Image 1 (cartoon, helix red, strand yellow):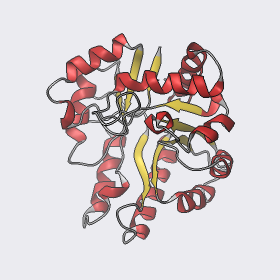
Image 2 (image 1 turned 30 degrees about the vertical axis):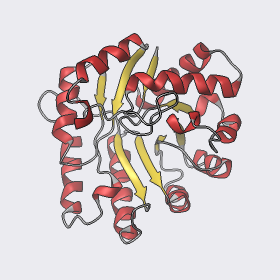
Image 3 (image 1 turned 90 degrees about the vertical axis):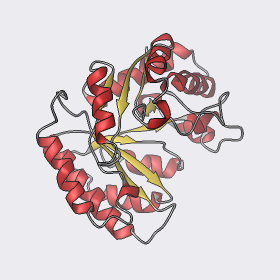
Image 4 (image 1 turned 135 degrees about the vertical axis):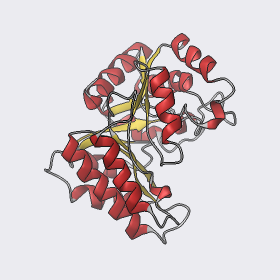
Length: 262
């Protein structure tokens, strides 16, 4: 059994076949999917999926960095995140992490300071509520490492989702606390720069994720991604590490259960 630690199966791309996508997960040996939040526009969709599959789809709460951009109400949105962490909505027993949070300077660096402020505020929430963080980073690895090093020694733990930087960042981020690294479809791409990094990562530091409906792995690249495709990522990591598929499945599942306290 394997766990997709980062799935947006609640997004509209699955409105026509969500039940079938869940069935394909079970067929592929996916025992759970973790649902990172995005913003208030999509929270209710996430809640509904978690209510429908309470032992399979486990929700988190947070404000995505790109939802800070061009948003005059982002501080109120942070207040909503904390409100939900204090009191989950009806039908949601709890949240399993603070995420998806982080820094994303790909589209614009104009909101860099606001994103850093929002990120730090949500890391503080994770410390307060004793939850792991799930961190999105795009075109901002230097800023991310510096920010995380400012929290070292404070008991922060969590996941660097869609890890895409080098071994130096991996080592420095490991020094900031108990952190794992989500590996997704990019590792299956031809000439992926992530392969030599994964070669040097300890299997005890790796989690499987899809980020569906985005970042579809080979052999389905170019199509919509889905959580059942996490099996291709597991197989690729096994190939890189030169070990059996089941070894990767067992270890990454144990890693996920440890970090999320499942």
